[in-house]
Image 1 (spheres, rainbow, N blue to C red):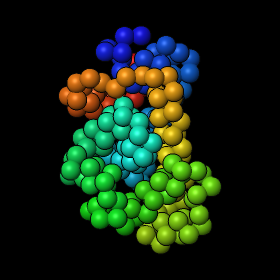
Image 2 (image 1 turned 60 degrees about the vertical axis):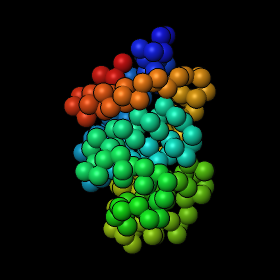
Image 3 (image 1 turned 90 degrees about the vertical axis):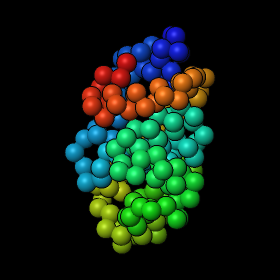
Length: 175
């Protein structure tokens, strides 16, 4: 695969479409399907986990996708990634991001206290469930991308262009 044309996960998805298409369907449902959390908030969870996993491609891509769908743009994404405790987000989203951060370390790190704290801030069972699933899925995607030694996009502007495609068309047509 030409990684200048298909950076990051796009090359492996095209290389093995029989596994790639179900992965894209999962991401479409998790990040763009009907949900109480906005697509921007769900992309922010993906970016947060990917950043903690030091996956350059996924963090860059999902940070751009989140920024394109959040009123505060990349400023907010950067604030969340650098200082979750002081980022200007809702207490509910902060509690969900703490759960996502726990999943990034290990699923066993999600404690009853973290779940109770999210519920106390108004998080529903669906939001908690899907936060755990988004975080777990992105741990897998990050390892898939990095395990195959894929290259991130060389041009930072590529992520902005990709975010337009994701926002307007979704993940089903990524590769």
